[in-house]
Length: 167
Image (cartoon, rainbow, N blue to C red; front, side, top):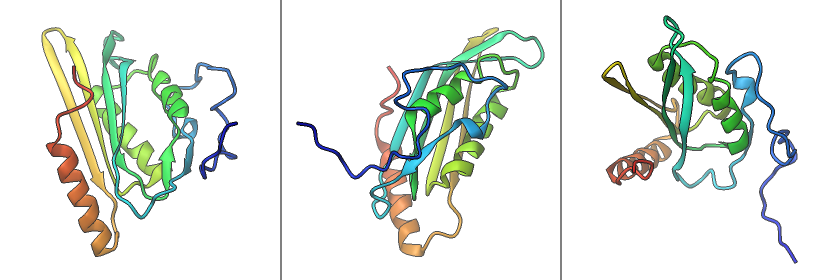
């Protein structure tokens, strides 16, 4: 006999459909889905890594490959992982600089989640003998003082840990 958690899933449209449709039209915040955070009073870190990220150079059209890692402390919402995967797939034929991609992912997550803290790391594979790593980060504005303190303590502790997504 299975049991059920308090997770609210009624608004999710992608997860559980059994389909993995390729997104058309490129990356968009509309591809991302979120579900309610059951523990908004507790600052905890969620880390999602997408090690098979690909996009295209906006000048040459050559592929750029790498790992996109998102780390965030949710407030009221968490990103649904299958929708995040489809969002990442949408970059596959999208032409953009690595720096722009990393910052756009951060802005799209801010739009849908409004997290207490979020950091996006773009760790791109060398191309032409040059390796580019892009880090973009934000803290939510207007948090109560105690929440802000707890969030910043959690972020500092998280950043002191070894990176679980590196081999």
